[in-house]
Image (cartoon, rainbow, N blue to C red):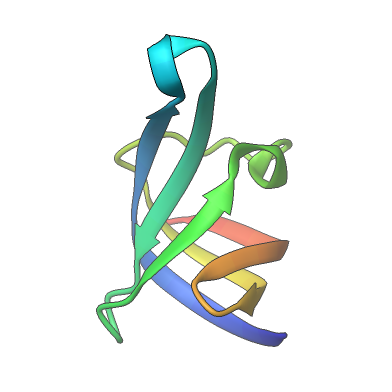
Amino acid sequence: MAERIIVGTVEEIVLEGEGFSHMEYVFSVKDEASGNYFFIDKKEIKGFAVKHGDRVSIKAECEGSQISEITEINLL
């Protein structure tokens, strides 16, 4: 895992299971510096007041494009 700072706009994504039997909510942030998308499980963002459309700076541990452990989030 690598710690990095990601700056971008939050998008909420709803993933639907077959027949709408299961819905999963995730967030994505497109890093303005690299152009890469990073994904955050909604459980990881609990405790932070972040919503779709917010421009943020996130300091976190990442595995590839998955944000696994958030250290800090700042609204910009």
